[in-house]
Image 1: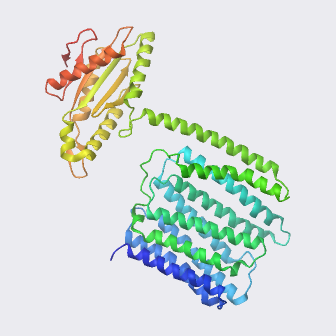
Image 2 (image 1 turned 180 degrees about the vertical axis):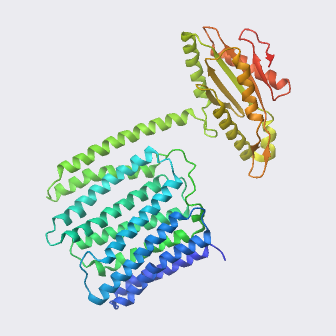
Image 3 (image 1 turned 180 degrees about the horizontal axis):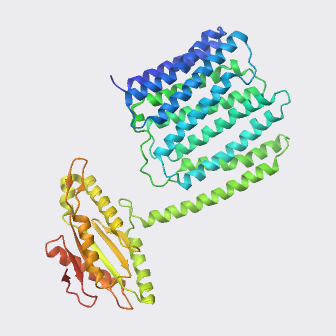
Length: 492
């Protein structure tokens, strides 16, 4: 069976049920006539998630199982709620269905949290700041429009107040997790879009439900809110049925979040929400909560400053780093070499320089393509970084050539360091493709400066001449220039 068909057919069923749910009530049909379409989707959603797990077989199904349990609680709550409305016509909070509804939200949040931890285990500071800015803004709105009005309502019992307050607070928690997942997704797949659509629509429907309740409307008979709930539940089941859910929680390869226009627009709206709320309350003649809004503005201002500092630091790192291998680039190395030479001259310690060139790299690219060559470069950079001496500086100097600066080195140590570097490359094969392992060798040219006035250009020239000698002698060897004033190198 084509694995694309189940989720598409399911969305068609959901669309029909949502239409029946809305149009049925607007047309004045009996309660069960349109509520049956709603409960059909509600009760089918956890079943569809389980079917999606069985069809697509994700490597780590824990998050999907928790999500299915949450939707099962939601389905049972809906059945109880619909039965009470049909049999009695009214409900007094709290009820058993409220406990199940709240439990389903907690379980949905736990599932999203599992996805976040697996997709982006680093919990990077930048995304955390972004999510916190959105949380403060949304939290202030939740307090002003939902929590505080409910707390002031003298007609509600204490247990009813707790129930009414729990819904917006848990919805806010779910929204914050959704923003965290989307901001640090590391790749937009259909399953991620469907999951975020579910979270966004569910939050919107719950918010509309709460607003109607605060205004004194009949929430249980609101057709459009019910239709949105049907669609949101359909999206979460479609997310599990879509084949892309197999790799949904694969670890992101993105090391840091980008400051995209969409992200900056979202943060701008979140920051402006607080003063906008205060202005709206002033124009409407409502009492202003100056301490609360002032504290919220101050915290978000500090968060934005921290975010800007993080962006500057990330851009600086990106400018100094080779994008393919993750080590420093040539520009950074050349600046660091000048600085280190001056420091060595003042302190009186020696400097060593290694130039490392992969042998016959063009042949690797011609045989296995540029992706194979890229894998060799990345693996080589990892080996060189892992075996580097403490305090050494490693950089990709250009193409297949790496360079390492080693401070506090003596003339006797440099030949051994150069030979160890060559052996670290040649001793173990490299997986150039998923099926092919090849042995890669490198030529190493080394030079040392023990004089009190080290010239960076002379040190580079000596190492380059040693590298040329190593390649001319047959490659896969390390050659050390005896000193900066003797251009003829000697083989180790």
